[in-house]
Image 1 (cartoon, rainbow, N blue to C red):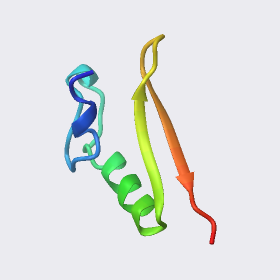
Image 2 (image 1 turned 30 degrees about the horizontal axis):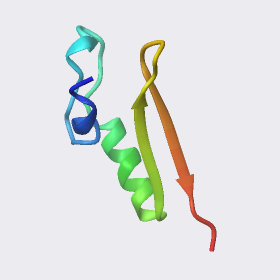
Image 3 (image 1 turned 180 degrees about the vertical axis):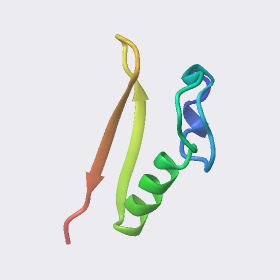
Image 4 (image 1 turned 90 degrees about the vertical axis):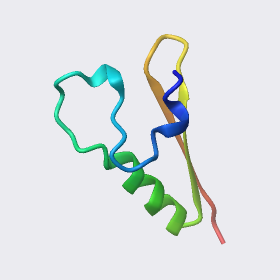
Amino acid sequence: SGELPMVFERFHRARSVGRTGGSGLGLSIAKRIADLHYADLSLLNRPEGGLGAHIEIKTF
């Protein structure tokens, strides 16, 4: 979706959520935690619809 680049911004909520509750903070918090742990968190559009999530955690 065209919103994919914005999903990690604080308070961003997808247009499609309608009346579903939420503050739009969850993914921005998850991204920040991943960054603090030198991990990579990414999302991608799934062909069958919805989003897929990928997290890569580096080991030292």
